[in-house]
Length: 154
Image (cartoon, rainbow, N blue to C red):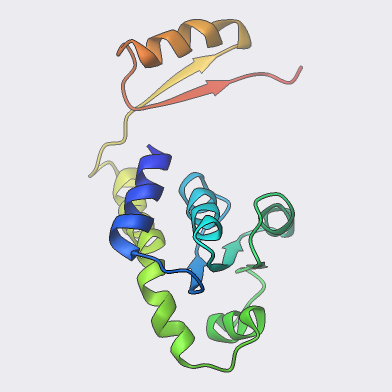
């Protein structure tokens, strides 16, 4: 589901073009990290936000974002975007607004999921030994919603 959401939101809704600036909110999340990588594949300059310094480093060092910042440490979003893109262009926000749509969609829907107005179904499997059966179930239609596997590190 995150892949489909990222793909449809980015390619179908945003219609990116090479060289454009792309801003991804919640960039270390399941959808955001894919959107940022899709944007890089398109040749866009990608700036992401995350809530911890570790996640910011992940975005820049592992996922290939051009820049990233911790939104909890920034008081001025436009200033952070201008700094990270090294641009004085006030049109940067306008060109980024379409790209923010995917993150805004999630910001819109998540509270409804949390309060139970919109239902979000997931199958949770606990234990590494159950992974093969869970994978078979995923591809044979026995699973509903997102499959989550919990593996203990002990």
